[in-house]
Amino acid sequence: MWKYFKHDNSYREWGILGPVEILAGFLIALAIGATGVGAGSITAPILILFFGMSASSAVTTSLVFSTIVKLFATPIYLSRGQINFKVLAYIAAGGLPAVIIGSLLLNHLDKDGLTRPILIIVGITVLISAAGTFWRSMSAQGVAKKPVHPGWLPAVFAPIGFEVGFSSAGAGALGTLALMRFSTLQPSEIVGTDLAFGLLLSIFAGGIHASTTGVPWPILWKLLMGGIPAVLMGTQLTKIVEPRKMRLVLCVWLIYIGGQLTWRAIQTPAKTKAPVVAPAGQTIPAK
Image (tube, rainbow, N blue to C red):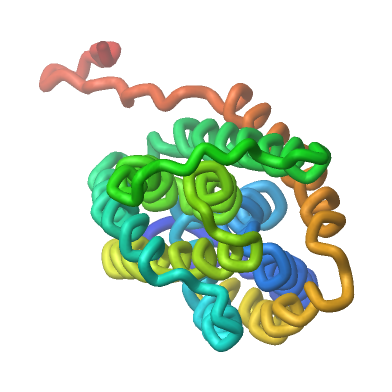
């Protein structure tokens, strides 16, 4: 039987399906550890499509989950010398203020009316980032490099930060593509630096969302049970499996998920105002 509990919204606690959530956390974190992609792009869509969470609650859960699993993965890339702190400082200078603005904006809007906009934003972001990563992985030349002066990197990464704050998606795939195109980092440094960038964004955005809306801990604990060991395994998986092949499989899945979210957004009716009742007892239609 379904069991419901109240928080700021209604959530489903899948009591008899706990292993499904643990498996979901395992697969998501495995992708994060191996490719640096997937924290928001996979977590929030899966929570919305398969676990019945509201869009705003899925964003909060995704950000907190991303923060915790990246706390385990980032030190491993750091120990390998694969994080460029100079570039990280520049991209964080643009991304952190923007992620705070995006998070505050989401939390100050009417969450009951945000389901459709968030679904559209997450769906389109996932589609664009997955298609871009897929094209990069299929192309023999990859992404054409056009390095810019580091002073321009904050402006490049500010929109990514805002997107993460509002929808939790984009830091991994979009950040990786931006670093490949606009920086001179080596591939190993790109994954590590972008993972550290995503961790910083998740800490700030997740903290804001959790402090204002709370965290659905029952489902988060189950995700983490599978996610923490999996992200450690994923960081070692790059030594066995070619990252390009993993990204191709991941991108095909993300394109499907992005399409499903966008289609659901199209089918979701826009919120309408409730009718206003006049003092005399006559109902006046809302404008």
